[in-house]
Image (cartoon, rainbow, N blue to C red; front, side):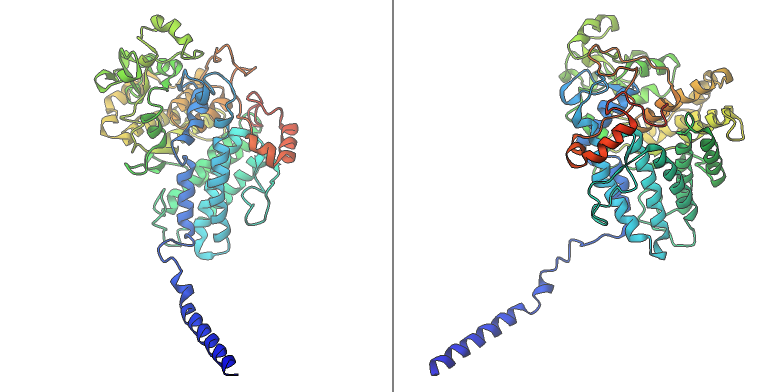
Length: 512
């Protein structure tokens, strides 16, 4: 009995000691440094940042496809860098936009919308997220065509892990609806969210952004649904689009948060990418004052190690664009014809101006908006002079160069001289407007490619590479990621049956 009492007492003391150790255990193990959740405006900021890619490697989708398709930046190299330079499929790089947007950007935007939609104190955050979501989906559907839209991003909230693909026509209809509703619902009655990375919570600027995106989305319909295009162009103008470069949607980079295209080209891809001949020739032929801001040539370089500061020149007269249709071996056949010492002697994007590590990136600009209005005026969809819209658009982009630093600012005399030389001509209106849009969208590969397909300008020639996999003239869309075949094959096959073969040749709905 005494033995039993001893064991009972010992057990009681042990339990008491364990209970005492457990007191405050939960509080002790709460990490008071790392947050368990983020405020919706901060998550929205993260989505905005991720839209321009998360790292340097993610820029390969833009570098190998978008820039090359519109013949602004090209590489002679293949393997991991193949794409528009050879008009071929590169499965790693065709998937970049898809993977980044669905896994990161849209996941964050859906979370913001879900968290803020029922909170009357987050009306502006909710509607700003809807505007940005519409913009992101424009890029996705412009790139691939039919995509998961209505069920996208709901794997966590509604357990939809195999979303159906929606027709691009239905997607654009909803994009226009979202832009109209969300932009109108923004209110100045609430205090500004000063942590907003784009406009510091300025609701007026967000409204201009929404209506400018609406104008862009409306003009995508110009070939397939002119009535819808005209209707929403009118709504965008009535709502109030960008009025100056101060309204531009910009992602500002620093020495810490780098311009990722600039970062990638300054590091491992420094010697691999060059300005394409059609782009350089257009700028050079027209004495465009943007050429020395866009370009640099390491004159006489015979290898990457000779691309030194001492050889670097941005003088317009020495710039030579790399011709389309060659690889790093066959291009040696034409070096003498172009008067260059090697492939490393062609002009490159300027890493001291437009692609400094802290150079800004632009989502949509006043220049682009004015040029779209110029085309809308030509088509009779908006009042005002097409020539005036055109002139303001070209001027705006010339003045925008100053945002790359004081050495990039174009003097007023040079601006006036260029505008005089490029005066609006009614008989060539659509060509003039959209060729200037091509220049004004330099480094905005998504928009440059989309508008090139929509408008047919500039009048580029087909890439003559002999191993091209493109039966038509140009790459019209990128193929779906291989991962979709594994995880969502049923819905993918339905989209292919509706849209057409999963190839680079298949046109998206609005590109008819």
